Amino acid sequence: MKAIEIINILKREYSDGFSGYIGFRKPTDDESYNIGDQCRNSYDWDYEYDLSSYNTENPIELDGTCATGTYIEDDEDAESIITEMMESNFNTYAGNEQIVVFGQSAEYGADENEVIIKNATVIAIIK
Image 1 (cartoon, rainbow, N blue to C red):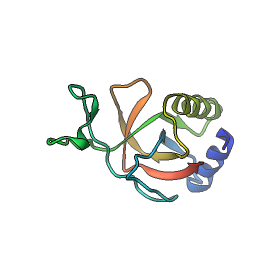
Image 2 (cartoon, one colour):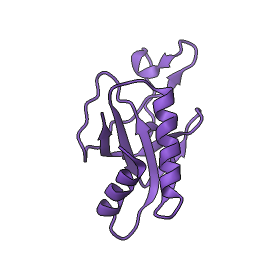
Image 3 (cartoon, helix red, strand yellow):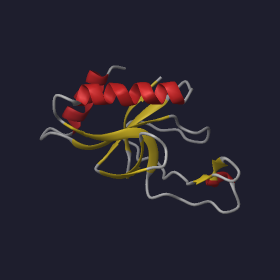
């Protein structure tokens, strides 16, 4: 999938123009999504044990879904921004499937290019 295809999806979904947070994410082994699904919230990282707190005795749920992403608007920079985020995610996280998520609000996470998107909706699946 190319960045322009993702932009076209956003333009169809948001006919008045889009602005918000886009993210690319490799689903965990126990996640399965379809286009239009809202992603479950992610969990904070347990740095002591170097794993998701989801897998610990004290899971800490975040207020959104973690992804490699950033804020974008319907403008001439959207294609290059999406291309950069997509390449960053594919170079960092191996996997047969990546999902593209979008939401209106987010906060930035601890990792480079990490966003925690509130009410993240799956807009595309890249296999």
